[in-house]
Image (cartoon, rainbow, N blue to C red):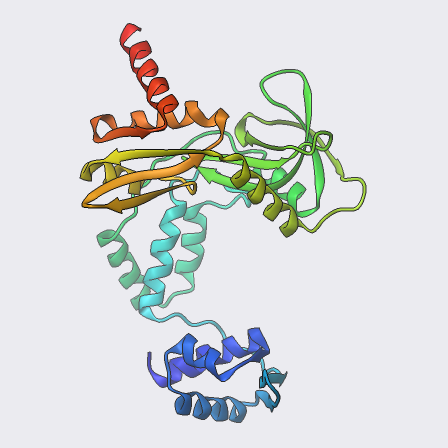
Length: 307
């Protein structure tokens, strides 16, 4: 990174943080103490009101910010941005109603001709290839709004019975969108596939509302606490590659004595999911523990052979 680019990024950094230490600049931009001090002097010359404050936890405060310059991406940043956007290509629906092609075309229009040609050439040489999913996502925008506006959603899910949910998060898993939230009556956490939710109406939540981030943390803690069953599966090298392409947050790879194990935890009601998941490894995975998982896996194989 050249000096001009570093100063520009430092300008953005200190405007965002407003209070910082010299070590923050040094660690963020990989520069020495003397260079960080000189850069602060240049930022002051640009009109940034940076003052030092003393004390045990002394550092710097931005008392007067300056307008940030327009965002200008370098050629490498352009290519990184467009490659990242390719992750949106397999999505036929998003909570915001805009497709990969729409965003790509709009960004392309803002590039000069030579950069546009460079991006197109790079995208023909580097491409993310994902699986397209055409599941109905017409309710994603409504579910997203209900999360942000802290509403209760009334919906049906495969039956005529109306359910209620206080949604807190939308997640994308295996090409499908899922809505996570709490049942207003039981306070238990629930997960529903969005394209199977027939929304009847949304209504304001009653009572004192906790902060959305606090609810999301509580959901994470409850999910982790409920996963009490540990599993361990021996993988071959192709099995390890399969895991890297198809993994979940509650799983990880463990390398011991030249062997690779897939380890993690599940809830009692997730045995069926794990058995189906392990079938995708074919003969590249051997279940070590628990015994219940081995028996359920063997039972599924017998069932498939008898069909």
